[in-house]
Length: 360
Image 1 (spheres, helix red, strand yellow):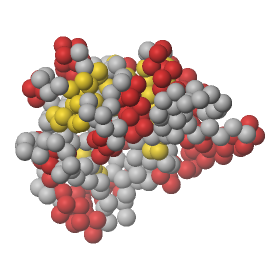
Image 2: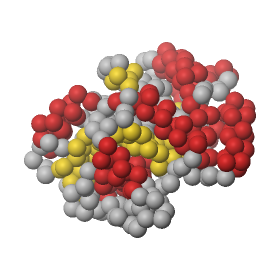
Image 3: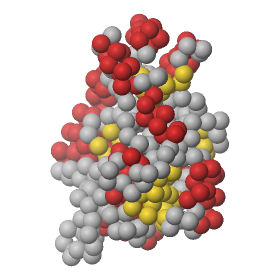
């Protein structure tokens, strides 16, 4: 069986750094917010050119913390893509914010032409999500947010280290949210997140929010918050994976180029926007019915991923069920992610190509 993310194959390259890091954690006897957390946060500040970077326990927490940091909560409206990772939507609604859905474009991200129609929605923020390893239309989102005085939150969970017109995605937006997991550009076992900002007041607020609303263990609560202390073992995993990121990315791009050549004229693939330098996170094909193709491919020995299966606007508990979103519906019905794992063999690459062409 060929699977999209073969984490076990990465073990050979990362195990030494992981074991040494875990040993040091035990020696230092600090399992949260310690030595390795500080290294990751400093490195994120360096590569993003942001003044502050704070780790937390998930990308969902990162989004929730970012929203609350800007004073958003119950009843406040936030513009969000009608199609994305479910955590994007739940991070908004779990703190009481109301989603305002924006149609996506042919790349699977916010359609900034549609975004203009939401200027009178009463929204206070836009959560712009990069998807599949590409950056959203930053110029369009920034122009809209500046014009209508909205907070611009950059969800870079999948677009981290991709470039927008040559600029790292982590440098875009008023505040940046990141995610680390087994299916993210920098993989870890479990989940982890980060919030990046240039605002000193926000930095102190984020520190409180990730620590249950407390400044420190011995001080009283100043607000509600999250139990989102950064675990040292996750920070070790980030550093171990980050060390190989460039090599993995180059190999994923090489595999994807082979797919492009072999699928041309045979299989529709998701286009890459010209303004974005793709980080090769996910390779997406478009099929007639992805639910049928998924089963057929699985029977043939190829596991794919259904990113994603929901049009948010059609969910019974969301406020927008009467509107139609044609491009969202296309991605819901047709998009499948196939493996471009950097450890794939030539045989596996050839097998993916022949299987996709035959059974999708």
